[in-house]
Each structure stands twice: as structure tokens, then as C-alpha cells.
Image (cartoon, rainbow, N blue to C red; front, side, top):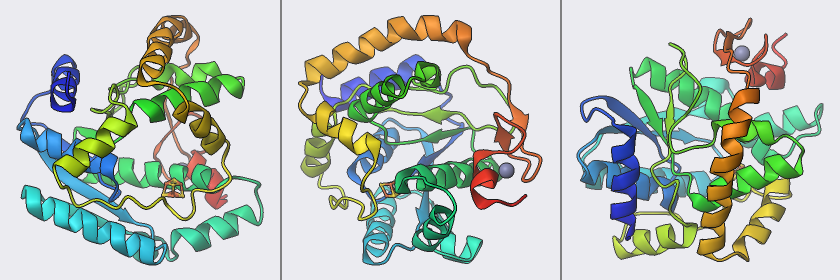
Amino acid sequence: MNIPQKVKQTLEKMKLNKKEKIVVALSGGKDSAVTCYLLKKFGYNIEGFHIDLSMGEYSDKCLKAVQDLCKQLGIKLHLYDIKQEMGSGMCYLRTAIQSEKSLKNCAICGVIKKWIMNREARKLKASKIATGHNLDDEVQTFLVNIFKGSPELSSNIGPISRNVSDKKFIPRLKPLFYVPEDEVRKYSKKEKLPVIYDKCPCAIDSYRIQVRKFVDTLSDAKKDHIMKNFEIVFKKLQKKKDTTINYCEICGEPARKDICKMCQLMKLK
Ligand code: SF4
Ligand SMILES: [Zn+2]
């Protein structure tokens, strides 16, 4: 099956309404660009959303790629300038947090981006957020959670958010869930999508990167196999999962604990 067929099948199983508004989280990279391109091709009601992380030349190139893509597809683009909205670019925010907490770059950036995405997508009255996570990303997440001794954290993994139903939480879609990264790269080149292929300059030194190097040595069939095994483990994890959603005492966003991860990072209390 080629990429469009695989993605179409994945989307059809989600039984989405083609009128509901889906906000696509665009980074400037190939995965989110292909996600956006295919959602549009299949007639979904999409708008783009990009967080400008203010990480110098890399962020400028990402912004340009996202603007070009949205123009090419004829869709609306919403921009969130982190420097304007939060007072500092990601590099500064991260360094300040790291002076107090021993956390990796992507761990911090990931929490901040997720918090922004959920809040902004809700303001835009979106019913779903689509992200560009591909099969390789999902295999990495599944393995990282196992290696860290927290397999239950994988119980949310899936092409669409499971277990969560809350008026403040916008469910996530991952249309490329079953598509290997290499296929996504080839397809983005074949369709000549405006995409930045450079790696993020801040993606260094994370545990996930070590796992990624291992996943890169696996064939696509083996990656598929891991995710099939995941489906078996998933059924058992489901029983253990705590699905309660609270609202953060500080910012009011959905949270697993009394204070959300973002406010814990920002030390707002
Ligand atoms: S690679 Fe890491 S630091 Fe770079 S944008 Fe992604 S999460 Fe942030
Ligand atoms: Zn909070």
C-alpha cells in the first residue's frame, strides 16, 4: 500500500466528520507537511498552526517553509510567536529551566509546545489536532517507555487519542501512525513539498535519540511488528491506566496532577 492509501485507511477508521475543524501542528519538517498535504487532499477541513520557537536561522527557515506550504495548499495559517507571547525564545526559556532542573532539551520543548497547542487549538474551536508523528516516532516512544520502566505511559499511543474525553482537551490525530519515516521523506520529495530537512539544532543528547539510532537499524517490517506487539500489550495497559483529567490549579489547563507539567517547569508557584 502506498502512503496516500495507508493514510486514507487510517483516517477512515477514525470516522471523522469532514466538516469538523482540524488544526495541523506544522513544524516546517517533512512529517507535518505530508500530514497536512494528505488531509487536504482527502477533503478534511484543516487549518495550519505553527509555533515560532525563535531559535535563530533554523526557526526562520521553518517559518518560511510553513508559510509556503499553507499558501500552496490554500489553507489558513495561525502563527504563535513564542518570543512575543511568552517573552523569550525557546533557547532562553530552556536555559533558565535547566539552571534549576536537570531536563533534556526536547523534554522541555515538548511540554511547552503541547501546552501551547492544546490551548490555542481550543481557542480556534478545533475539534482535533493533527500531528506528523510517523511509525518510527511511535516505535521510539513505545520502546523509551518500556526502557524507562513506565510502559503504562504508552497507553495513549495510537492514531487517535484514546481514553481521554474532556471538554478542555483537544484529541490528537496521527495520520502517519503506520507510515515509516523513510517513506514519508521520499513522498515529501516526490510531491516537492516546501520542507526543511535539517535537523533541529537543539535536538541533542536525549535518551530518545539513542533509541532512535537503534530503531534506525530495524527494517520497516520489524517496526511494524513492534507496533503489532504493542497492540497486544496495549489491551493489558488499558486496565491499569488512570484516565482522570484534572485542571491545573495555576493555568486551568488539563493536567494529570494538581499542577500541569508546564506550570511545574515554569515554576509559577
Ligand atoms: S527537536 Fe527537540 S528541541 Fe527541537 S523543536 Fe523538536 S522538541 Fe524542540
Ligand atoms: Zn498549568
